[in-house]
Length: 158
Length: 110
Image 1 (cartoon, rainbow over the protein chains, first blue to last red):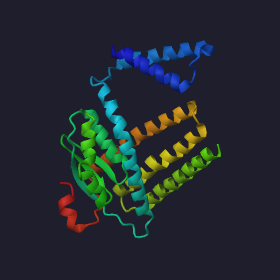
Image 2: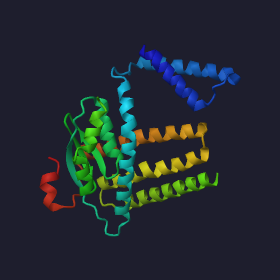
Image 3: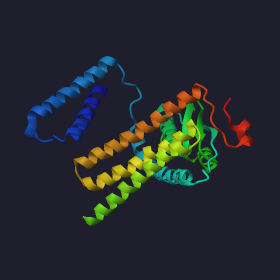
Image 4: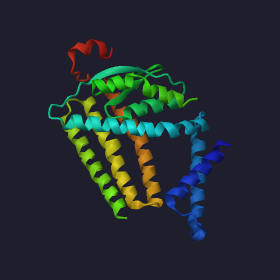
């Protein structure tokens, strides 16, 4: 079942990439189907498909989360750009530990990636409970320690 | 049509300026870890605005769909690679430059 859905997704992406969704070039379509089938065969031979899959629920929450994240990235970018352009270079680098309350691996990765995507904070290491974060400024460190982003990523799991 | 062109060029120019600021950050910031933040500007808003400007040029076509996919892939892979580089430095014991000596004992890792 998983391989069937994977073939469908692979072929949909192939259609998107190639732009050949009419029957004008039947040979190319057939080659596309064959190559998708071959890729799925290779993946099944390699045995690298994980058990977790993708929860449908996640997509619903992502619609709220992604615009918020983009806005946070935008604000942080402006802040860091201003600090770089400031002749005094007002930075105060520090390393802080942030608690991650996510349970699933996927959401932990989303949280760590969100931290890194926001300029001013980079996730350096993560273990079962905490994420080691390098922050460029005190404000960035306070922001990530306030737990707002952590809370928002945790709600993705529900 | 002219409005879309203007919007597109505003995005392209702002994106280029942000990429240059990111590059300037790489030169100005003091150590390895803080330089990663400078690179982060180029990765996210710099590249994002350039791609957005190109999407305005592309209009509602296949080109725009592909540009959106490039943006999504960029937003997934760039933090992953930044994390990989940062983690490699952190676990191999590169000491970060910490500005505030009073905070040093409290914030420094193990």
